[in-house]
Length: 288
Image 1 (cartoon, rainbow, N blue to C red):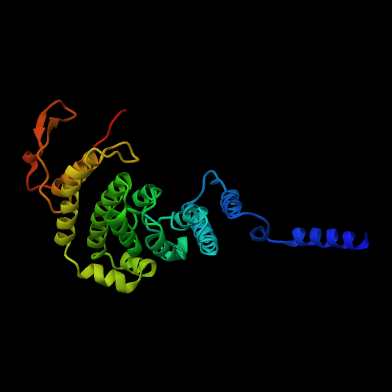
Image 2 (image 1 turned 90 degrees about the vertical axis):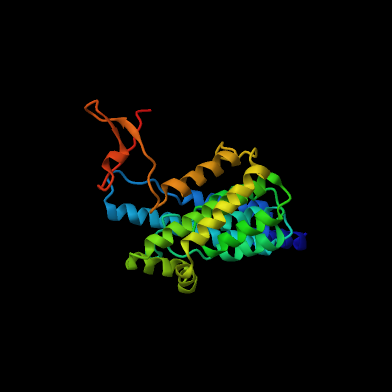
């Protein structure tokens, strides 16, 4: 009887002092990380100053980056559990699209490793379409590797469509940003801190025309093969591809603007070409 009481007492102490990882399943640990991250999220205060807003945004990024490290650790501890891929996706879900400098948002310490594991062990998963669409608006080097790997190897048509469209959007956005950075050394320094000097130096050496050529090739190839495939935003691949092609051909910096006809606030008809050679500001808006 004394032995039984001792065992019960020992078991109680063990469970009372044990960590989540010792007494729960991988799935429960995943939910615990998610819950902890969500619980620590605070609502913005009314009438915040600009400095307070920046601090608030930075706290959100750092909190999510910290959670990413925990998700990655969980996936590496249980690589064969079904929850591993969900954890890996969450580990690289936070995309610094603005992008905010390291001093504000902190450093992403999990995406590079998480994406490497996804490419190696989960590239054929049907769960990757949302991640491909999400990272398409980012800038990190590993996003390109992920999108190319999924576009090439995924057996799922819907995932392949998301990856190809995501790669086209990613390459085009990145090229546009690099061109803007050339004239702004202060911002260029922030990009060096976020993404690495070697990576940025390599991008500066590339020609914008080469990126545009590859993007157009990706889109034109996708139209006959995947044109009817729906994307998560409600568009088909054909709709999204034609929209991006139009932007590249007619709306990119340095391209001639298409002529526009309309009526001004005084009811007088005009054409954009009437103002050729002058600086023109176009302001489009809708009441709807």
